[in-house]
Length: 112
Length: 114
Image (tube, rainbow over all chains, first blue to last red; front, side, top):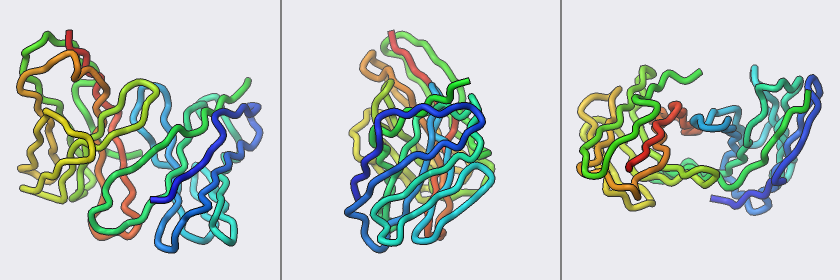
């Protein structure tokens, strides 16, 4: 699976959009980009994923650059409950590749 | 929200005890996983299963064992707990056949062995 690079920490004001970047310059054609978050002491929560196109769901939007070497997770109206560590994961879905490698992630703090 | 449940949420036991951590999911997923995570550290895959009667070891060697007798249930057992087993244990599940293979996690069991 391709390596990802994320900022260690970010702050965002409550009610504003939180934009979390991720670099994955070695991504290959069959690898998806996934975003999870982990709130202190809880299990990771799936947020969104994509292959090439931008994606949106009820939680967030995912913007993937045309060359797929980077992506941005957007939380449109951040709330205090969005304070968590956010993980960008790049992973192929080949048979036998079961492990999710979370890395160090970005610690997002929402400021009241 | 994912329908995957882990019990207990917290467990404090003495050395040498046998314990079973329970994990159940109601999504009909065939694949299930156990990860181990120390505070502030990365998740390590310790066991996974492709379906009933299938169990595989993950990347991190573990003294625990798992069983998969029913699709919805994937318990993890430690025959004789030791302080080195103190950690958070996370269970996850995903569909077989979907290209994306999204894993959904339970809330975790935080184990402390004294």
